[in-house]
Image 1 (spheres, rainbow, N blue to C red):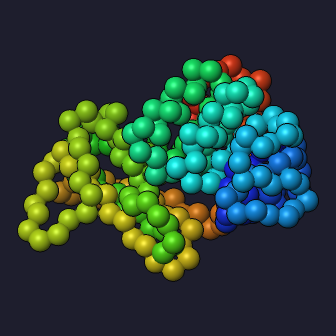
Image 2: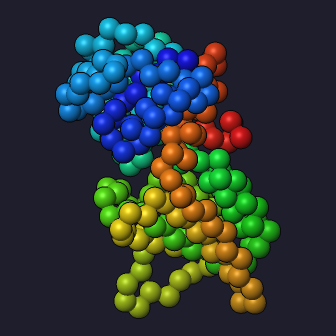
Length: 245
């Protein structure tokens, strides 16, 4: 499985490259793309239009703003894409959905199996305790650009599938009594925290806390390459961690 790695020089790009070098899931790094010119063991381009090498799957750990030229290249070359970036605006999300009509696209706000399980547990708990109040706390390193995290939004959206009346509230300040329908989301940015997500479900008499903590960024690189292997041979469509799990 030959990989085109978008975001070659980033923290996650380096993790993916290391796993490819080790042959994880049969992955082999064939070519890279990054905004910074780079000398490496494989060709690294700054422009998708300049790429000459063939790849079986694109793994994207770059920046959400790069998605349009990436998808244009993927559609032109009929190459499946694993979109592992977060922070997309509505137009970028629409572009991902449109591309999935032509090619296989795997899109998840979090590439962790554990987070996929956390989502399912949160949905089951929210459905089982309809009277409970729900808060989500997410923690990340101080360099993270988007807040709240894509994973926190994914958790909230999943809960709203079983609670159609619910809506999100991003943080609180001053006098802000909550309503039962609120799902509070709170973002912490500090140090070198890889990623923590906590879903708190509380009634007047009990509290259930569901938490996932990432210990290494390699966790997300492993998930992205597992998704890449999953996409090989798939028909056009929009896939997620739920399909793979």
